[in-house]
Length: 265
Image 1 (cartoon, one colour):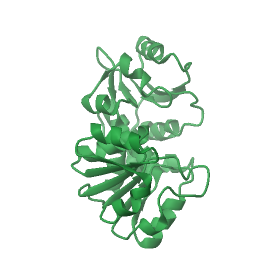
Image 2 (cartoon, rainbow, N blue to C red):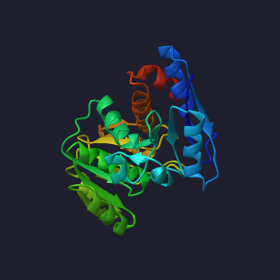
Image 3 (spheres, rainbow, N blue to C red):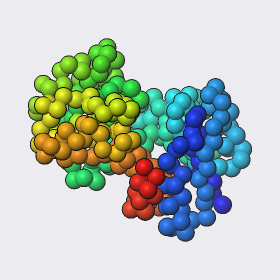
């Protein structure tokens, strides 16, 4: 049996297990997906233990995405993002990857959004880093807007061709933009949006990384303008799809994984 898993702290509310287990069942794979909650200062020990126990792969979530970098061989994109969320344990040394970046791209592509032109990413934290690098890798011109403008400038200096801005410039940035991604947690705990409603327009595709609630204020505002809207569960789904395909070498059963994920939301 191949055993895959997730390390995080806390980890009990993760939606990854039902999503991956649904894929194993659909394809008839003899595999299981389990969760582990090591102490917050034990990222390296956790990876070593996974190797010793013969696990086939791991997903990584808060607070370990940066801490595991020293315990794996990160690929180029994960190294530049500075975070790992997927580890392949099949080789001589664990390799680290970041599927959050491609998860955002595939979520947009699933909704027939062309990954070209200009994008505005709100937030310069972990999710903002991954999304900004992911869109820039696809050739998009990325503008990063953040409440602390210095963080936006710092991230933009690392992302090829990106620019950093304050959150107060969103209206100007969005007037000619093709894609908007909210990579902050605004909208998760209260019914508000990080983007002024009057800055949205019908030519935009809007991805909100928040998936609880599934329909945020930002997405409702965007829908009213006629914009294409993409909820955060799609990004969560496709980062899992990318991990599954990397581990198994098989095409993921996306519909079954999506059904299992949304059944838990």
